[in-house]
Image (cartoon, rainbow, N blue to C red; front, side, top):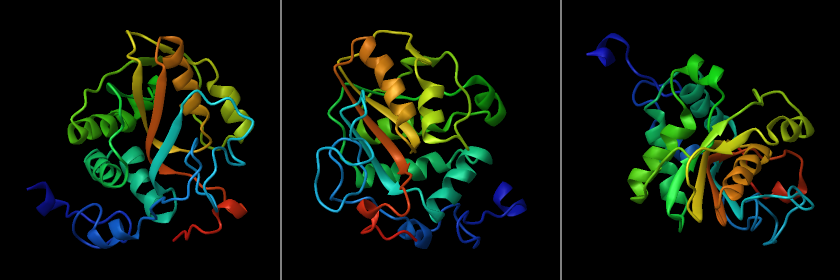
Length: 229
């Protein structure tokens, strides 16, 4: 009945139909090999560490995202996060599960939100993505972390992002040895490594990061082979 009163439109192209139409789903830019073995950035050839993560202490063993955070993905994430279109988490989970292998872990968890953003949105995109992925991968999912500080990352420089999340997460329950940490978008890796550090401090030996989308640094020669739409 609601669809008759307020017909749905694709968030990317605006055509009537599902919130992500088949054509726009196909237009998402997949992140494919070669990739940096550690942080998952596209590279011109396989490397253990790329220019983006070399010299940094990363608490996770690997980070992978399904698609590039470009035009179509930005529109999708914007509707999902800022307009409260919660069903898009299922679309995102389907794309991730189709493009990334099931992690060899005991449990999925997620980067916790700051309280103000959760109250503002009424839901937490990373948690919804994690729970939708857990159903597809037949893995348990649970909240392991809480946020003790920090704030919004949007608009901050890389250095500011790294400083703003350092030490702001802590584990609230027992943490298994192998965990996958889920977030919606990987930007600088600062949030992921801060959350992974808290998991490691609570007993995790291996933390893998799984995201729907990943920001690419435009103009970087290592990303020149990725065709952004």
